[in-house]
Image (cartoon, rainbow, N blue to C red):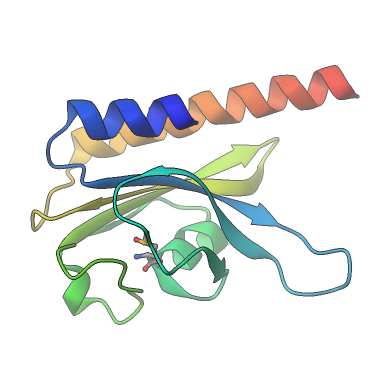
Length: 139
Ligand code: SME
């Protein structure tokens, strides 16, 4: 996951922040949270995000990729940097269940098109396959 976010940010100049959030389920009955994992880019105040908040919460709770062309026009948006203009969030699945997501922010408006969706969904699938294999070995 660290390698994926580093490569994406290093190779694609419009990818200004890249990180994974993973869903943490608390045994004490607290609602599940998206918890920030490996990331590259500016520090963010949003290290734990409830599933009903933000663009991150929307992608995790619907299980669909979310592309936002203008974050300032989206009432769901939780601001990390005043420079961010657009965002893509792609869910990561394990055996049909959303376990986390890949989140990319750009300083460029409308930075993410169908090619970006394909690339980010491929990256999310690599993590899915890795986690599914790891779980299979544990079982
Ligand atoms: N903008 C996200 C929060 C995470 S930061 O982009 C790193 C959101 O609206 O959920």
